[in-house]
Image (tube, rainbow, N blue to C red; front, side, top):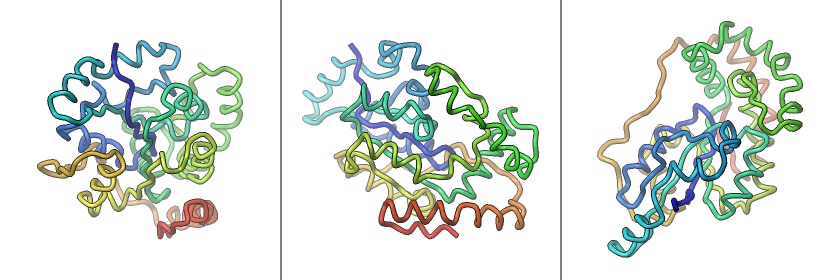
Amino acid sequence: MRKLPDYVIIGAQRCGTTSLYNYLAQHPFVAPAFRKEVHFFDLNYDKGLSWYRANFPTVLSARLFERKHGRPLLTGEASPYYLFHPHAPRRIRQHLPGAKLIVLLRNPIERAYSHYNLARKLGVEDLSFEEGLKKESERLEGEVSKMLRDEFYLSKSHRHHSYLQKGIYADQLKTWFDLFPREQILILKSEDLFSDPSTTFRQVLDFLHLPPWEPPEYEKYNALEYQKIDPSTRKWLAEYFQDHNQRLYDLLGRDFGWR
């Protein structure tokens, strides 16, 4: 028998989840999933819980570790599509009701542009950034309804072309708050992880009740290089996200300072 995760980094995409996952993976009291993005609760749910368990250490190895070191061995994964996926919250509540959930949130303007550049790199986007933004509502129209009707339906556009929608964090978090106690969800500002990884990482360790420790270096993983966003596009996005960001600040009681 294999363990199920003690923690899951559920999102958001292009917000530093790969870096945080790798920092945790190096901790001496963590044995992470055999791959970062298992994508069980969004893309691979049809494969069953046994398939999911196969990605984690055995219960026996965890028991032996705890007997030797006097404290538990934690395991976890990071699949940033979970935060946005309509079925993931309920599925995780069903199978991992006690797991600690970690969310990284980045300025949605920067997140959207990074998301777009990743889509270009993966070969799933042919349009310009501005064209992709204009076509998003058309591309996503009816996709969530299809996903809700058929829980195994996989939507390319919902996953890859949701540049704006994935940045409306308040709506996504409300769904998770309906299913999990807020104290079970740690919400971090990505910019804090980027600028002061040591302090942010300590918050994560405290949340997971892990002893203090730091990696040899805070390397930035999965970073992309691309041209700066067009100023007029940035202005449009700032106006688009202004009210959505305020709803997030009201929900969390915290102003992230995104302008």
